[in-house]
Amino acid sequence: MLDGRPRRRLLPEGMRSLGCLVAACLLLSPASCLKQRPEASPVVTSPTTPTPSQSDAPTGKYGQVQGQQLAGSGIEAFTLQGKAERAAISVVSVEGQGQPFTKAVRAEVKAKNQNPWDVQLALKVAQPVNAGDVILATVYVKAEASRAESGEAQTELVMELSREPWSKSVSYPLRAASQWKKFFVRFKAERSYAAGDAQLLFRLGYEPQTVLIGGVTVENFGNRLALADLPTTPIEYPGMEAEAPWRKAAAERIEKLRKRELAVRVLDKQKKPVRGAEVSLRQTKQAFGFGSAVVAQTLTRPGNDQYKKAVEELFNVAVLENNLKWQPLAGDWGEGWTVEAATKGVEWLAQRGIPTRGHVLVWPSFRNLPRSVKALEKDPPKLRAAVSQHVTQLATAMRGKLVHWDVLNEPFDNHDLMDLLGEDVMVDWFKLARAADPTAKLFINDYAILSGGGGTTAHRDNYERVIKLLIDKGAPLDGVGMQGHFGTSLTGPEDMLQILDRYAKLGKQIWITEYDVDLDDEELAARFTQDFYTTLFSHPAVGGILMWGFWDGAHWHKNAPLFRQDWSLKPAGAAYRKLVLETFRTNVDGKTDAGGAYTARAFFGSYDVEVKLGNQRKVARVELTADSPTVTVQLD
Image 1 (cartoon, rainbow, N blue to C red):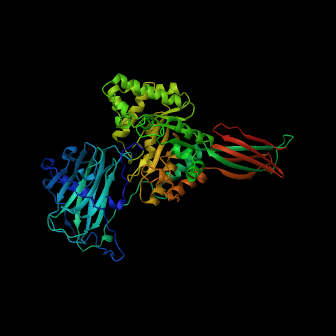
Image 2: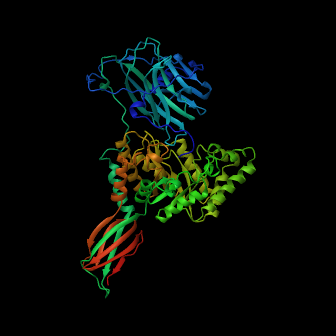
Image 3: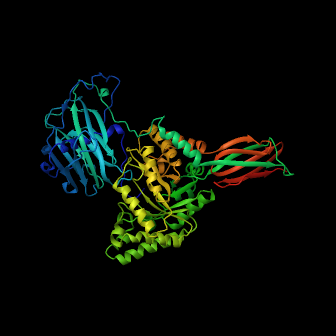
């Protein structure tokens, strides 16, 4: 979700695993041995991750050759560099978590940093390293707390010269969610380092987070192995196999939940059944929501033809990405952000039969509220009144124009208003929104619910708690939004279904409101996108899926699901088109039987039913629902 905070794009998976090296050393010794001393920020050079060349043929000796350990085993050799007050480091027990180690380093980043190197853990490499030496780092990483919308925590492993010009052999970002993730990082030394000249680093200068790092080894195999001998860490997710059992079960649920018989009866002018009439069913719109975030100004200004064409062709619901957020409407983002501009975008969509979701009435942290609201922090009564007035005024201004409103956004780590005004204020916001716009369905919305792997997390627990609080206290809550921003920690279909089951028990419809997957591997992104949409479409509680932008030219990560900057279609775009325009859509032809009937099993939604007999032709527009009657077409 675009919120004005800086975002970092993920680098390829092959550039992610070395950062764990420093952490490994941390876990080998007591935390009390850590020395804290500020150190000047190193100069950052371009990250490098050598890959095997054609001449670097594998020797086949991996597992037979022992490498020299560069990470050592003494935690006292580490120092906390940079702005040490921004992080707290400790060694914790992880016994019983199913990993081949019992202790890990827990790094809590307490304040936002401008640069990854603002605070970091460092270890001098005692051994000399020669240029071209083949090195393998093995690292385990786990997120304990994260503000990232993927639910992931991050660090970065660096091996570099410990003085200017800080020449690097590897710079490898590591991201993991709430389950331990194992990384292999293979690289070659880019230069020779004398004993004590190289250092291993774990970057920690990010948003506030808590990351665990364990099981770290760094082995130098010299020239006895080739880079191609060493393992790598593929990005995978459970259930990605072509024959995974969930696929058959999902197909059966889709057939049962999303379709029914569309019955057509053709009569002549004497109202007698007509045999042999040609019947064509063409679905024009699905009942299930397939949508995207859009930019109102891009839709309403001249030009932008490819953007507009894609919206009309590929989506049956939309959400304005930023146009209805309070900060821009308050003028904090400059000129051009007005309710009038938002309304024009909604009208453009409505003219094309595309309903719009409203996002967002209250994003309850001061970092996502207007500056004028932050100024009321010390005056709770005025603060309460200002937020209430905003909810009422904006919902009234958009009354009757929106199908959904995200009333409350990201309460897990956006709770400044609740801290000052009490949690019951959330109930008040829903009641005010309902009074101002009785027809819009009212939603809560949060991130890291579907993303970040399976299992339970504090974020998921809190979301369930807040939803129950709203229901128990009488808030007019209609739906539960799950954002769906994914990084490299991809949740498998079975895990997603379990998460959906958990929240479906609360009795509210679920919408996925902000799907994207930030991977550099486009084929993997396509595979995951297809499985993601299939899984969600198969669950009875899910009413729709919206992606958070579809084109790289208008996407917060510049890595949108469907189109590249030049409008070429990505593999995930091709997968989406096939699913939405073919697999999950009914277009069939047939002929009536002796009773004048033709029946086909069809997806719920809107249809053009065309009947032809000789020179006669009639078209009926039909809405197929769970209780639709037989469609009768009478010829002249």
